[in-house]
Image (cartoon, rainbow, N blue to C red; front, side, top):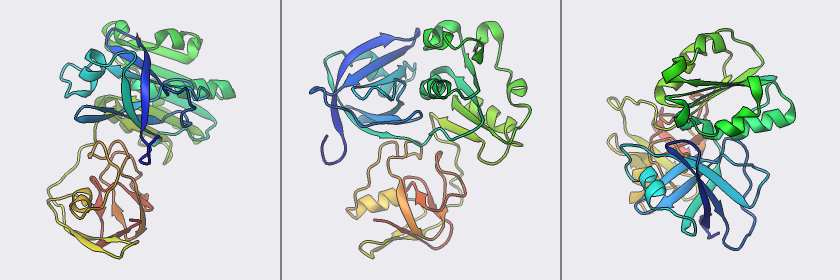
Length: 311
């Protein structure tokens, strides 16, 4: 590991998990232990001209290996095409993380909803709650059965898992699954934006904090009324003006202040920065709207005239 926390890992195996999902197993070339992680975590996978985030879907107890699974996207901008067409066993790749913005919380029971390759962060979650003996159920939808990854692994859980291919069974029955709110349940959802929106609608009457989602792409943002603000760097006392047409991350970089980043769209969490003063306007897809102690400067801004950050 270098001083930025990036690992050089070797691809030791690949495996088709469905007709379009390829899993990639990574290990340290010197067989050193890898940083630990918990269900819901993801890593950054470096590739030429791209950094992409992929959920870890192996066993957290296995400190020798990381496993990710990548959907071959028809309109790939480089990430999935590189993994499917270029990456081969024996290759070295740069890996950052792991980070976790989708962690399991304690609850009396769990409802998991996965769509397509959204099963990847959910897979180690169901293994963990099953290991602990907590009640749970999973509704897993996909276009066709052959497109759905990890069905063999899920088959061992029996009736707790509802596998629902759309071409034969239609859409998931979210009204039946989420129609009755309970105070002691946690709902976890990962999948396409349409599925997440539908789950959010059904969970609107659930207790605050019951629903946890992870998105592949950023939630829609309205950029029509952005206002400038001052970004104060607490360590140096520097005061930087963030204009309406630029992000705080852009301004920091223009002034030579390095903040780790990858997606620059409020999805990966790489640029998470502690807030020491002022109120952040969260425009990202990770942090709770009420959270005031951290900000993603790639997209988020200040509610008032200034924001003080731990930089």
